[in-house]
Amino acid sequence: MKRAILWTMFLVVLALDPSAFPQQASAKRPKITGIDHVDFYTTSAEANEHLYTIALGMPSAPPLEPGQTQRFMVGSQWVGYSPTPDAQATNRMDHLAFRTEDCEALRLYLVAKGIKVPDSVSKLKEDSKSFMVIDPEGHKIQFVERSKPLVGGGIIMGSTGPIIADPVSHRIIHVGFIVHDRDAEDHFYRDLLGFHIYWHGGMQPDRTDWVAMQVPDGTDWLEYMLNIKPNADLHTTGVMNHVSIGVLDMKQAQAKLESHGWKAHGDEHAQMGKDGKWQLNVYDPDFTRIELMEFKPVQKPCCSDFQRPHPQEQ
Image 1 (tube, rainbow, N blue to C red):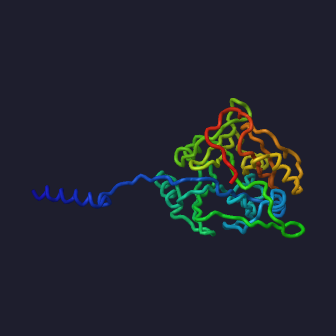
Image 2 (cartoon, rainbow, N blue to C red):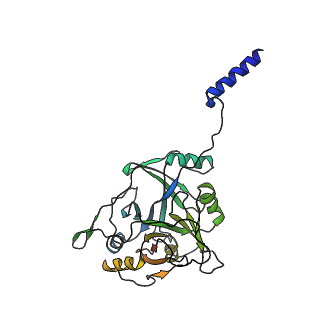
Image 3 (cartoon, rainbow, N blue to C red):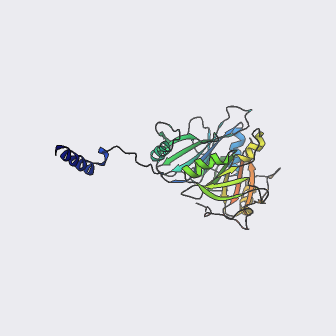
């Protein structure tokens, strides 16, 4: 009789307070909405400054992160640079950052999935939060929660004094980096983080060299750059580890570049990409590629159809 009474009391307590019975709540992934920024290394800050603020017309802003010395605004996103710690290294990419609506919730979600993460999120300038993880390929991936959009100044310093910024783009649409093990990266980005294929293709129709993995809650994407030799030189790595900025019309974008004094040389020319979009590549002093790309295709892409919506100008 006493046992029955005690059991009844236990059930009543459990009904009133579910936490009285230990259980593992399933973690839910918060939204990952797009690219926040990408950070590279440079050996020539002065030439870099000229490329971004004069040729590309992008306003600079004070550095936000430790070790960073340059930050160039692309709308509310940015491209950052730090002095290279090793001038002989062939990789000039430091890290890539995605925006999330809740940094702490995402950190706990990854803990539940067995991913190594910091013990807590960090507080940044501009009233933001972040944490860093290492993906299966060794890339540093940062997740950032912004309480308010970042904005850059509208004035840049020209050779004759202050001038009004005239950016060729207001939107980062994708970042690419070298991937050797697609299955491992797919498990991390697709299976755990919810990224999905936007498009894939290659130099030949039957070969996949690029896989565009769109963020789960937006239209920005991460591009796997496949089939690259492990000992790639600085030029090859710079082409592959790149940032892409969106433009509405490539002819108008090139005309703006030229009005800023930019002159094409080498491989820098407008061309039709395999994805059916116009693109134009320019390079920073360390061969890192800044790819101008139209938001939408103007002809049918090779290899596969687009699976998700295209980005738009902000």
